[in-house]
Image 1 (cartoon, rainbow, N blue to C red):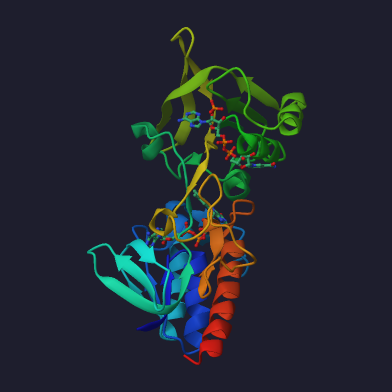
Image 2: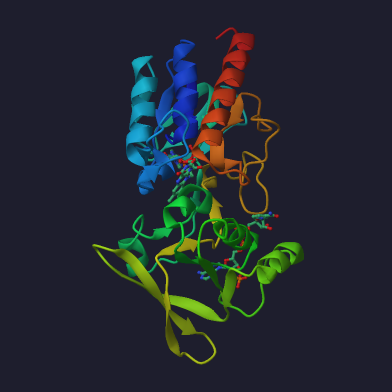
Length: 307
Ligand code: FAD
Ligand code: NAP
C-alpha cells in the first residue's frame, strides 16, 4: 500500500510531491495526460516568484518535478480513471484497470480552459491565442486584442486587459451578455472596450512568423463575414475541472469543481490542491501554495494514523 498517492503533476501536484517527499512519504505521483499541467501550454511565465527574467512554462514545471524527485517522489506516466473512497485503504483505478491502494490521496488534477476547437486556434496557441489575461496580458501592451465569451470571466479578462492594451473587443455569440449585471455594466461603460455582438470566430488569422494578426468573424444572424485586426485573442468560454474520475465519491459544485474546506475534501485522508477546486485565482503560485498546504495536511493525517 502507498502512504500517499498524488493525482496530477502541475504546480499543485508537484509542490505537494516535494513537501511530502521531504517529509519521507515517498509519494507516488500520477502525471495524467498532460505531464507538468497547463504551464506546458504556454511559453514565458513572468509572474512566478524567483525568476526575475521570466521562465519558460515547461522548464518551470520540469524544475519542480526534478526538485520533488530529488527527495524521493516517484512520477508515473499514467492517468487515474476512477476511485473508491468508501473504505480503507483508499483505492484509485489506473487507466489499465489496475488498482492502487493508498492511505492518503491528494487530488491535483487541475482544470482545463475550454477552447473553440477550430484548427487555426490550435495553430496559434501560445502565439497570440491564450486563455489567461493575468498570465499573458502584459505581452500585449499597447496592442489591440479580443476576448471571446460573454460571461463574468470574459468581462473580468476584458477589464483587466484595458490596463495595458490599446483596445479590447469582446466577441460574443449572442446580443446579450451572460455576465452578472454589475460586471456587464462595468465592461459596457469602459471606453476601451468594444463589442462584436452575435459573432462567432470562424478563423484565427495570422502567419507563423508574426503570430495572430486578426480574427475572421461570422455574424450568426446574417452569415456575413468580417475581419477584426487584433494581435491577441483571449478565450474566456469557461473552464472544465478534471474531476470525472472522482464523480460520486467527492463533492463537486454545479460546474464540477471540488468542494473543499481549506484543502480538505469530505473524505478523511483525501485532500485537494490547485485549480481543481480554485476557480477564483487560477495561478501557478496559488496552485503551488495549496499543494504545500495539502501535503502538510496529508503528513499530519498520516501521523495520526501512525503510518
Ligand atoms: P494543472 O496545471 O492543470 O495540472 C493538472 C495536472 O493533473 C496535469 O498534470 C494533468 O495531466 C493531471 N491530471 C488531470 N486529470 C488527471 C487524471 N485523471 N489522472 C492523473 N492526472 C490527471 N499561471 C501563472 O501563474 N502564470 C502564468 O504565466 C500562467 N500562464 C498560463 C497560460 C496558459 C495558456 C494557461 C492555460 C494557464 C496559465 N497559468 C499561468 C495558469 C496556471 O497554469 C494554472 O493555474 C496552474 O497550472 C494550475 O496548476 P494545477 O497543478 O492545479 O493544475
Ligand atoms: P460562463 O458563465 O459559462 O460563460 C461562458 C461564456 O462563453 C458564455 O457567454 C457563453 O455564451 C460563451 N461560450 C461558451 N461556449 C462557447 C463557444 N463554443 N463559442 C462561443 N462562445 C461560447 O463561464 P465563466 O464566464 O467562466 O464563468 C463561470 C462561473 O464563474 C460563473 O458562475 C461566473 O458567474 C463565475 N465567475 C464570477 C466572476 C465574478 O463574479 N467576478 C468572475 C469570473 C467567473 P452563451 O452566453 O451564449 O452561453
